[in-house]
Image (cartoon, rainbow, N blue to C red; front, side, top):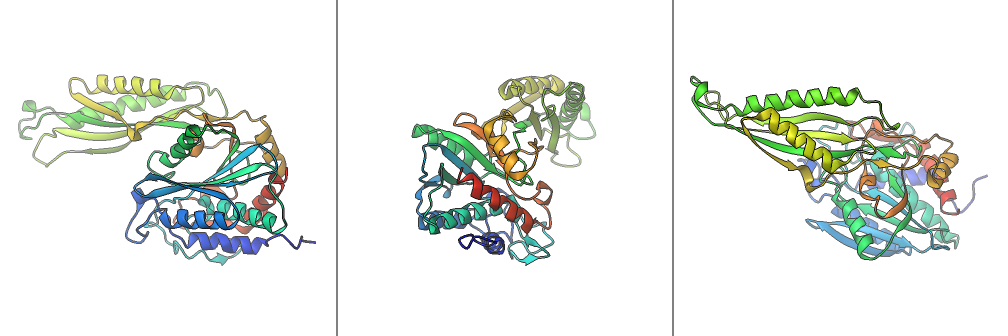
Length: 387
């Protein structure tokens, strides 16, 4: 028999739909139908809702009026747990389903952000509402943190929360980074280094290519060198379950006209870092590889977003990983994607990526989350906050 003080799974699912109806598309992926304010409306909603539930709320202006929200719920102990939920979603212009209707149909909640990651936010707040109504405090002191700019923009929201913690001399005992993991605790994923490259050539009439220097040809040599580097990485035995690093050229843009030898060519290369790899050293080594490949043409190489992230890796036998695995009856896992966990190694003793639903539904033309996953995650958080 259900406890009378528990909010029903259907009600929590409806609340997920309510959050979907607050558009929060990352401004760097905004389009004609995505709304104009990025995460602003959702961060405002979270600050007000958390205050209503008794939290001590801090609003932190991160970039261009886009705010992180830090909501602190005093617990019965000094153990500090943070649940970080990124507020932004990816773009919606490619969606073939209504992006923001948040409807419930066929045992699912539909819409952008339903699985990535508004379900986690609705679940945690609902459990806190239940506890408040029952006169209970969570056992750990809980921070519910809404961060901006996770989907694109260099994880500056997570970096802002990290910096805020360091400024205030605070540290987190256990950090849960909300992502759709089918309620399996993810204890590792790759980091990343982005390299923005401009190859400089010299323009000439296309009928006399010998009078110019073809920047696209230089870029092509870089691409070939990067492909060879990927083959080398593939040949290395992976040190952990996260796997090896990888590298690829992901964008190329060059040429000014069909009768001019191209004087410049831009490209972007992305390097995923495995646990144990030094991202700054990777940047230096790849930069040198590209310069040699493009020679004699000059290259300008900069670090994308101004930071390189080491891989996230938590011991799978750690208390937080094992506790969540036991509650969810799942096995610890690793992920192929990245998350805000990349920013928190300096401020959290234990970190795990965890949440309801499948990453396979994220970023899709039709996004949804199973209500059964919402129910499962709610039960886990009810136990977690009483433990």
